[in-house]
Amino acid sequence: MTILDNEDINDNFKKPETLREKLKTLNQQSPAILNDFKKYYVFFNKNPEYPEYQNLFENIKNNLTKTGSDLFVLSNDVESGTNEINKKMFALNILIQKEKERNRELKKKLGIVEHKNNASTELIYDYKNMYSEEYLRNWSLFFCILIIGSSISKINSKPIGYIA
Image (cartoon, rainbow, N blue to C red; front, side):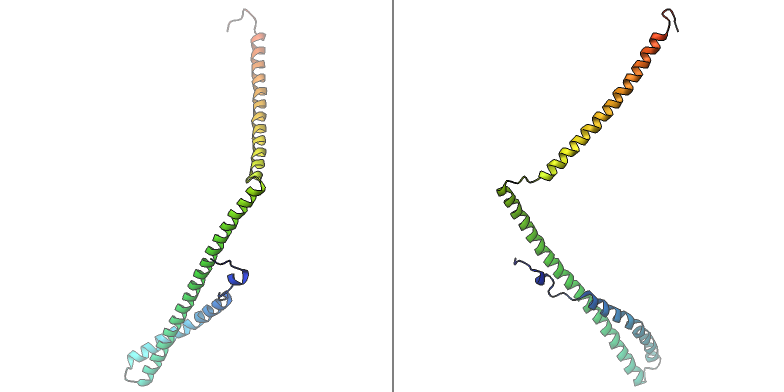
């Protein structure tokens, strides 16, 4: 694999505007060609003995065939362009993976911890989690003290000889 530079990446691609313009032209021509084909098909089949109708029908049939082949060529150009882009993206992906590996090796040589940022984020998350747990624990203790205190006060407020 060769190292791709910016010029190599943008090489040999047809401009989307060009392809869109060709497609727009074919799209505009198609209805007129189809209408003429229908008209001359009927004329030719009703009067096959007239050479003028036969020539017009053959011409319009050739135009229709040419339009179909132009559309096929356009479709093929788009597909081949897509294949080229995929090849170049694959090559770029390989280069990115190589550079990531090289970066990892350089970090190891420098003694940089791989996931230092992840470790600090995890530590912050742990502290938040511990705070939330202690917060809930404190509220639950407070409510338990209230419930126990009210239960004790109810028990102590009843007379000793009182039977319910």
